[in-house]
Image (cartoon, rainbow, N blue to C red; front, side, top):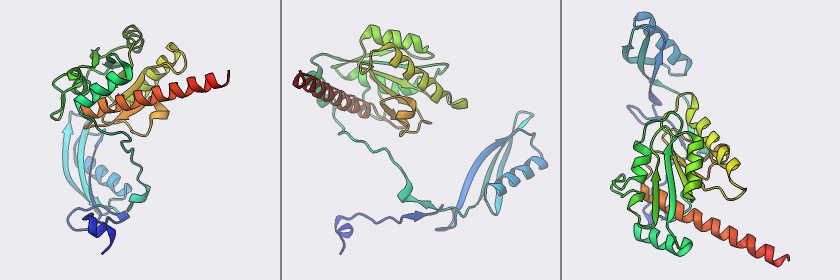
Length: 269
């Protein structure tokens, strides 16, 4: 028997294709909206688009008018595309998950004071469900929010916070971390808002002293931290415990880097 067999792990293929009715049939279902009234011509346009997308043959399974000038479609069909799992890039969690007691103990040991977290939805985003799920004591997915942690001070600024106001409040609170939630994503607003926010913090703080900048939302690419100028990106389904554990991990790394820099400077004197 192989090592995988003994461990009980099932070996997965490297190359896969979509599954609909039978294994390997390549069937997928897609939805989209066209800016035309719902009629037979609109349905023909939807099938033409599906054909150009590579769905052959394509079946129109749903069409519904959205007001007088738009139509929503659902199309079902087969594609020839394959997925190579070896090319899939995943951001792995590089820190251990800690319980609330462990988080509190680690903060006490590292900082010897409460860790200050300022959270907000910036720009025109009024959807506070995400930020509240992480910060409010009610929490999410059976986990208490950061307000529950005795060694974390939470300042929740709510919705539609201007970036300058967020920076000013973070400075006033001497924030260790800033958590920003972005749900509104039209025209990539989540990207431009986050880049504006990170640039504002770099301008307002001396180099190397900005708070940890953490953003989250359903449309973020978790590997785009460098592009957005932030320390961490969390996707949908993130729990308060994951965020708390990350903050402890990141603060420990910062303290370690700071200690190394100080030691190097003293050795060169």
